[in-house]
Image 1: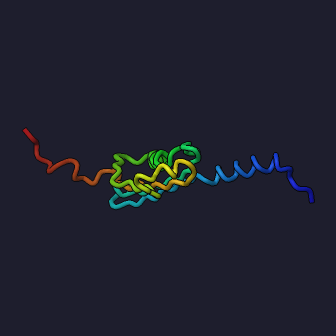
Image 2: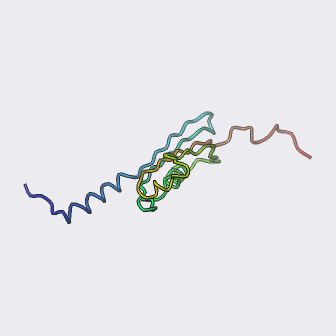
Image 3: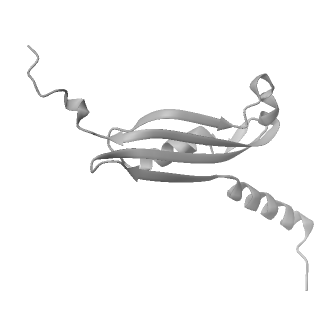
Length: 118
């Protein structure tokens, strides 16, 4: 069995690592026939302040937008890890996780009480 030369193996390793570093998922639940809740997640790899393939928050938001649900409203955003003032350490090298939760659709309460307001 022949081995790959180091010059070929190194770029293949980094390409595989970066392609596995980002992922996204979405979970959509229906509360009524026209409304419900959603949870979208995104993961990104950061090296030297460059998020690959893009920031985890943008991955999660794009994933939710691609679901094309009407009247989407984000209610909560959770970023992990969050090191506070030491967050710059993750800009050197790290992995970021973001979860976005929200509601979508129309429950019927948006129309008001049905009386004319004059």
